[in-house]
Length: 132
Image 1 (tube, rainbow, N blue to C red):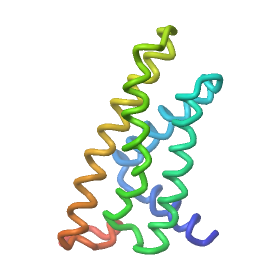
Image 2 (image 1 turned 180 degrees about the vertical axis):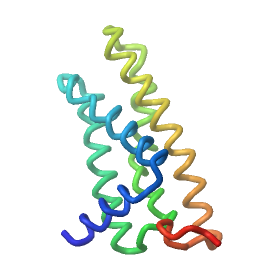
Image 3 (image 1 turned 135 degrees about the vertical axis):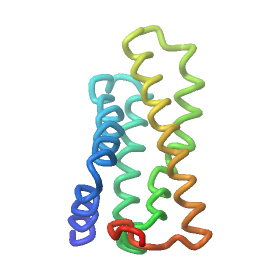
Image 4 (image 1 turned 180 degrees about the horizontal axis):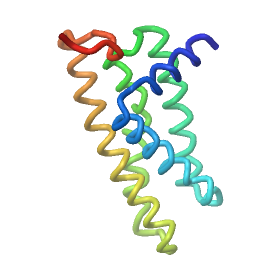
């Protein structure tokens, strides 16, 4: 529980712009609750929950570092699944939500990949501490 609370505290300690981005990511993905009859929504929510759980594990292991970009690794499978399911979607509303999830999660993955690469190449500082 300590890791969970520490992770949440670190997230809410981020600058406002990043907190808004995190709220957007969570909100867009959680909107799947309105489409629970669809496998795509179920898997999107499962990937979101898995990502959050992995984030807590990574936080406990390495602190609030760029390695947290690993937490969205499940989206590497989710994005192609959602993309290939688009032609079968008949509901315009559901299809729009899927497209918003695709754009949001793909943008997030770009940021995450950059963060993990930076971690691999030595940027292992705690992100709560401003760089000098």
